[in-house]
Length: 318
Ligand SMILES: [Zn+2]
Image (cartoon, rainbow, N blue to C red; front, side, top):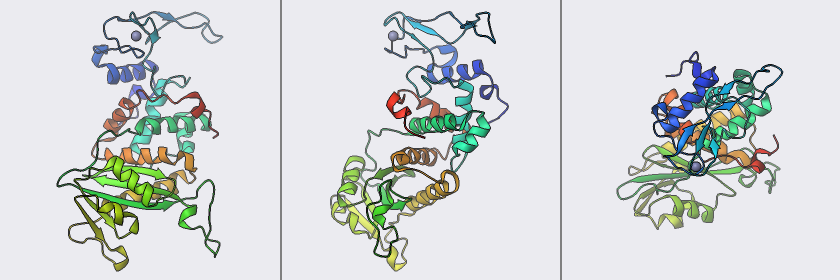
């Protein structure tokens, strides 16, 4: 469980060792080169700190390793979301813990106050952590004898508003569209440009096994693609129905309600180009809800590898 007095949240060496253990095992037993993956010719290397006004005497710095194969140097930050940031590792560990422990997320304002970094830094950190929380799925959901719920919702405001109703109110097409797929209590949620027959068909094709039983509401968006599945069961929400013939989309709806409460209560504003990252965060928390907060943060750190944001994306306007 999380204990805020744990030195990993305050002490740089302890934080580094914590991340090293997660990545390379106890005492770095399974260390591998963060550049080429070599496991054999890796050795700790002595580095000295650069003299500064505060510390004019150079001191040895721990945490650098050298690979005899590719002849490159690396640290536990290399090839992770923590690379190329001057933010202390203990702040990364604390920020990750806080984001993992808050049910509806944590705003950059609050993170900035609690971690002791500027608002702008807190904003970058939280977006990088969301990047770590995201998963590239290579397995299909469902299969024979399994149910997959699919549901869509509309939220916030698109960056470019396309259309309004004749009364001037935003129509669905001016809101951002989100589609969620739930199978065995796990959700995959996607921001789509517009939720229509084509985009939903495409998402289902890419993510859901056709041997599954598809559960949706009566929306016409699912009628055609539903025929491609082993079975397609629908509930008629317009008739006040929530379960029919064992079919429901309650899990997807619960997911949306947590997501919307979090977005309204905590994040308040979210531009369309960042929406998928917020969805990653909510998927991550939903899918790891059986874990305690500390184990959830360990999972996030483990997923931090291979997800370094490129320069261009980091430069996005705040
Ligand atoms: Zn190497």
